Image (cartoon, rainbow over all chains, first blue to last red; front, side):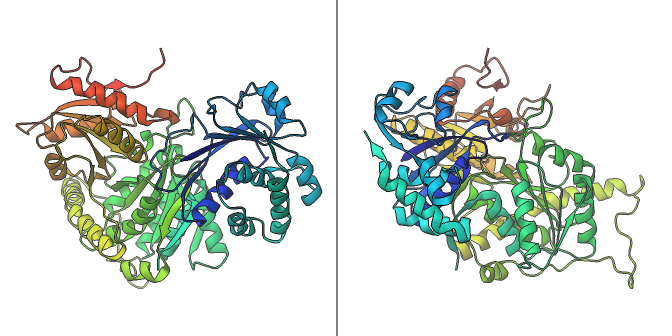
Amino acid sequence: MLEIRWHGRGGQGAVTSVELLALAAIGEGKFAQGFPSFGPERRGAPVAAFNRINDRRIKSRAGIYQPDVVAVLDESLIDLVNVVEGLKSKGTLIVNTQKTAKQLAKATGFKGRIGVVDAKGIALKEMGVPIANTTMIGALIKATGAVKLESMKSPIEQRFGRIADRNMNAMTRAYNEIKIS
Amino acid sequence: MSKRIGMEVAIAAAEAVALCRIDVAAVYPITPSTHIAEHLSDIVSNGELDAEFMTVESEHSAMSAIIGASTAGARAFTATGSQGLMYMHEMLPVASAMRLPVVMAIGNRAVSGPLNILNDHGDIMMERDAGWISLFAQNGQEVIDMIIQAFKIAEHRDVMLPVNVSIDGFILTHMVEAMEMPDQEEVDRFLPPFKPFETLHPDQPVSMGAFAGNDIYTEISKSKDMALVNSKKTILQVWKEWKKQFGRSYEPIESYKTDNAEILILTMGSMSETAEIAIDSLRAKGMPVGLLKLKLWRPFPYDELKKAVKGVKVLAVIDRAISYGGSGGPVCGEIRSALYDERNRPAIVNYIIGLGGRDVTPEDFMMIAKAASQAEKKAPKDRYVIYGVRE
């Protein structure tokens, strides 16, 4: 079972990311969960959201405390919350940043595998907005193989309609451009 | 044909309600059941469902409105939870006394105070004695299934009672997961159109919900109790039909790995499958522990409980609510009473967990099973334990 924790700020679409990724996995015939960190949300405040992806039915409804993967939508959160808390030492940290994996290792203290991608830059270029949630899914898919990239097409189309292509393009670019240590 | 879908459970609940071709929904949205109301409103305003969606000014009005709609012969639905359910409270026993087969989805949430919007069962437990049939879903699939079953149970001529379905707030309502969604043809085949016993109509005036003095109130109360007790027969019949058509089985108390079990844990709602993980792990270590999942809260399944605990040494009842100054957990109070007359009843221990959104993990159930295993030799000094209190 793959367990993922997403960090973002309210309004950046972390909850949308977990929903789209879960739908893609379910579309592949797998079992998946996508859920927010429960409670009231405020725009701009740090939020977390979670995925479980598995080949068999998932029983646990407990929180995720030792994720295999952490995806950070907003690197300014690294100064505010311990984004690598509980992250398995053999797990993967993926950050939306212009910095290098080495710089991120220093900033977070995480000694495992780190993927970096300028998701904000890609999103601005491909969609004209600095909202990197769908872009980051592409990076995460490359780093983890959680689902196939083409499995995102249907959930993205259903969610975004006429701007689906732009989201897919940004996601594909992040898939190709992520640098993994 | 049923279709495998990925969807947020609250959205799936609204889809299931629409498949039941309701005539009227009256909802005052409240977290965490809000998405049920929102999506149902979308379905109606898109023209996909020919129904009246009433945006009422309070939950009290929502329940009053569906009571009114039901007396006029409509298939009627509402959704709420917590403060909203408590605000409805006054009208709940009216719906059951008038024998109106309305259906309500509850996104279970802790009640104020202190203010808390997260999950526990404090809200539904306050409505225990309202005379409704009360079901608990453990996952998204059961939410879909139970909503459709609820209308059939409620409207059965031998029942004619309101039904509520408890859906753990956030843990289930806000979960995106895989489910099988039946199609319209399948639901139509399972659920025939609502045939009301009597309706309010200007051309044929009747009185409904009239005053009942001390000459008749007792008799009406007894008939309501009998109707609720007798409804179990129909519930079992509807579940049998469901299994035949959809292949998924439902029981008042579902057993998990109970063969030769000496210790049983009893759960309700979304914590049940999490508990299965602990049972798997403890069984692998040779501990004779099993799980009972209570799905039918009212009418309470006395016979099934007695059968399920036969030969068991310890029963650990898990509550997600407190009966303050009383039995501890309301479910355990019920179970102690149910088993009192049994000659070889198990030792009963009660743990209250998951209040106000406190996470419930497999490790919690492992701790509880280990603690419960001691109770056979030595009765615990407390009648109930509020588990995991930070001190």
